[in-house]
Length: 399
Image (cartoon, helix red, strand yellow):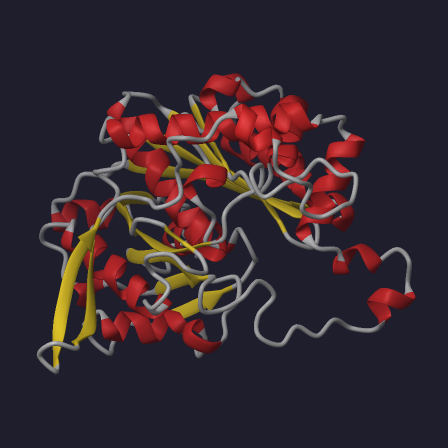
């Protein structure tokens, strides 16, 4: 007998502050510890929910090896004190890994295979470099001209997007400046406080004078990336980072970062059972492919697909969290989809706030969901481009 499709609701969304990599505040903090922190915090925000009731923990990670390998989902949930009856799974779709985790968790609930699930993401770009510790591309990629773009660095793909979609250096720098300004305004206004779960840092420091080891503790609760002094004039002085006569610089690209985020999803029956009020409903997901050499335009294909499945038009969307991998691809997406720039990343984006790869989907979803409720808006989209030529988009309805 066929089961009716049921709705999946988000009841909690939390994240760590995001640290800069590779020499930022989380450079010595393991990604499984960051993940354990948000898993505990997410459950704690659901009064009446015991961790034993969680039927699966699905975690996105773009480089699942070393400190974030060995099925980091299962390891982190055990570190977080969940009972060993709770299973965990790690998924990888590069930059959209934790958005994929949200879609998978929602689909488990929609299909009636789970009542309570957690979707999350974690990434330490301080500990695990872009591409991993031992990247090894198939030689056939270089032997076949139609596949060689798989080997392009992300910066080169951004340069190709800038060329093909006619995005100027000045436009990129202006976009990057605005990202920092919006992020700083949001921090000053306390707009991230609801979503961030402060993280306690501990360090053992030798005291030469006494010959003892001192324990230093501090709590971090603010994203490390945004710069108050960013200006169009300062960014204009930076040299191209990827091509000799290019337009893509370190200043108009996303920051390498460390961080984690987690969402708790429930069925309607679970909402009643635990007496929890939802903050949003999951509506639809879309993922699509584009040529690898212009991978940054993936959202141009994914967003319309997700909106079609949600039964919405782009003018109905109040808030778009568009991951700013590069200003070049962000502007191309905004222009091609005819998005209202005022509705895109109103609190700044990855150029200012950082992009911890596989964790970004969960982090940006937390920002979106709390923002929609705070501003009493209804529909939002989280979307990003994905390495090797893909795009992903998820649609949410605030409750």
